[in-house]
Image (cartoon, rainbow, N blue to C red; front, side, top):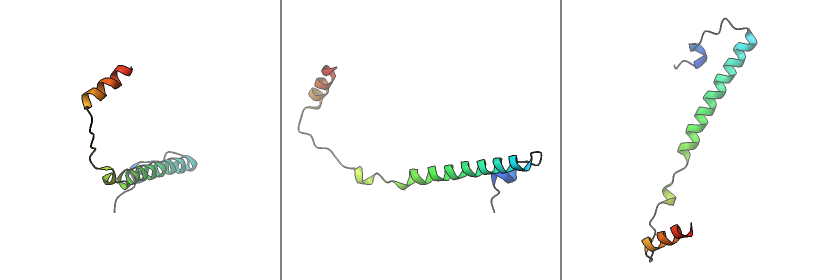
Amino acid sequence: MPRSATDLLDLSGLPAPQRREVRDFVQFLLTRQAGAKKSAASYRFSDLCGTVTWKGDAVAAQRSLRDEW
């Protein structure tokens, strides 16, 4: 069974309210980290894959955009 982050720290020197505050903050960080990993992996970009067909001159289009500046 994995040990939690609060098991790795010796918080015995702190008063009880501060120990609870540290424990709550560690739990908050772990929850936020788990949420970040979950949201990053939940979206797949496979629906955006494809090819673009263009019947123009790419160099001429680039030059016209560059000349606008």
